Image (cartoon, rainbow, N blue to C red; front, top):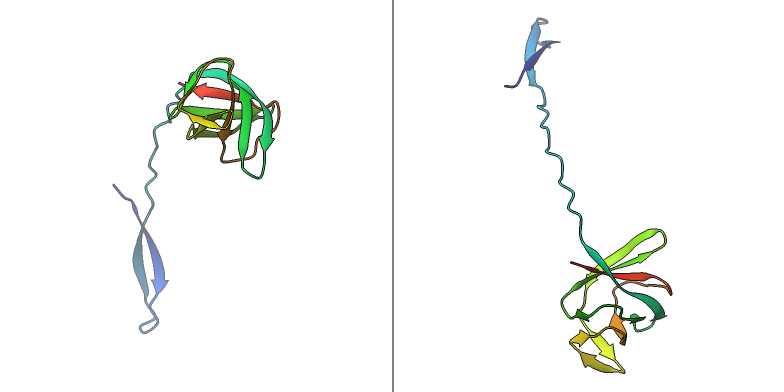
Length: 121
């Protein structure tokens, strides 16, 4: 239910005060957001970044494939997340990369050496 506040305002023509009703705002309580913890697995550490073609090079510590989502982090925290769109091993496109492979991957933002790469499960 909305409460109405009355305010008396003088009428210009007759000089009598006229009451105007103004509705008050109703506050709505929003439910607390549920925090879902994502499982992260370390996939590798960036060893090189080519800025002109926006490609990160890293050694794979656990198998990955196209379509999975990765999170790039530095010492301060998360840089960005992105799905794997392309993987190359020795300039050849592949769909999967096994443990120990050194891969190149197109990234949407700049990364630096020693940035960690995690797989979001």
